[in-house]
Length: 236
Image (cartoon, rainbow, N blue to C red; front, side, top):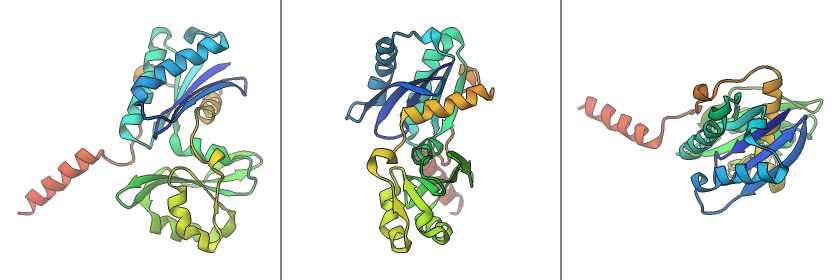
């Protein structure tokens, strides 16, 4: 089973291909170019390098959020473009779960996947590593760093921080023993998206290309500002 995964929820972008649980290849870029310039060429070049064609894919997986509103939309648009010609089954993967997958070898750890959501908040989900698998402890959510710290403090040094918001949290979390994952395993990668996507495809948890949609935990900034102005105007 050949699965291609795409990850573009933050600054970096990557594309990976897995087959029957084995990573065949991954292209990764962290440049100033926009994802709209890099993603599709990366996917095409990766498949060409592997001697495969889009029509051979059994499924396409993409991190569907949370994350950068623009980045997530571009990733989903790229997958739709690859999927529509052959109606290839699609899978949306939580960006936070893809981040947590980087810590799946840390048996017994509580993996805290955290992304900087700005405005004093983070996107977060908690997972426990058991027998080499992730067990989700809470849904994806947006909350303040202070709220997250209060919830996580009892786990002490079992807590492992991953994601682009990990260093931000570590500044205060380290005082009670929380650990910061090494940079090489800290961030979301297309390989994780593809491997998680393969599991979903095997479980039959796929959607058609037209049904693939982003999952946002907050309104875009423009909509939040509009809502504030409307609420302020209503209060006059």
